[in-house]
Image (cartoon, rainbow, N blue to C red; front, top):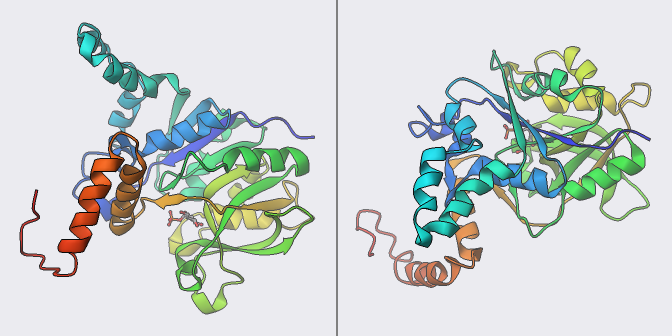
Length: 309
Ligand code: G1P
């Protein structure tokens, strides 16, 4: 049996070009989703699955990210002195209590696979999880802990998969699979990064959660740049689907819960609306405004008219 998974790796070295100019001086991972930076949801998810050793792979311009998971003494002192601000103080401290967060710098932006390979020294020869910050998984739906269970049972690697409409498959890594005796768990026999719709082997997409065997580092070292001229994690995992290569088998857990994509602007806006609607503190008022907005404003659709307060 392989070692227990205890570490999570979060690649956060991307340039965030889709969100410029917001990401000129602020990392994309620090953009707020309602009132928390996107990356905090991901660290919370790792911590809920028992992974309290988190390595963030950072690029340039990422100091605000480090500050976020560090203590903020002046701010905390100020809030502490004000009885009415206790709850806010707790929320400020939450981000520092979640996990031990470590950082490693990705010197060259050579792709997601290259970012994961920067974690090798920290991870060592143990299985570990990779969580991509663009995919947020609703905390009410179980995914990572299930993947860790499946990895403990089978060894090798376990990837999160989700069925997507066929015309969207070319936005994702895509898996060829065989069923197993367990509902919701498949054996992955092949992977292709962002295939053309008519060449995709299925409509099962990789959704940014991976539990990987340490042999992935060997596979990454041998993986040539792929799609977009970048070293792709999908290509390296594909090597491990070969039964002759150590690091397999590769299984998939098919996720049927709520996932929010913050990767592009439209999806990011939808994620905020969905998460705010579900929040106990904001939801009731926000939903009622939203219903009114949708009923009265959207059918007219005049983008030049100012939005009513
Ligand atoms: C990355 C991966 C892709 C995966 C996707 C999930 O792509 O390369 O295989 O399906 O994340 O969000 P990106 O969206 O960063 O281009």
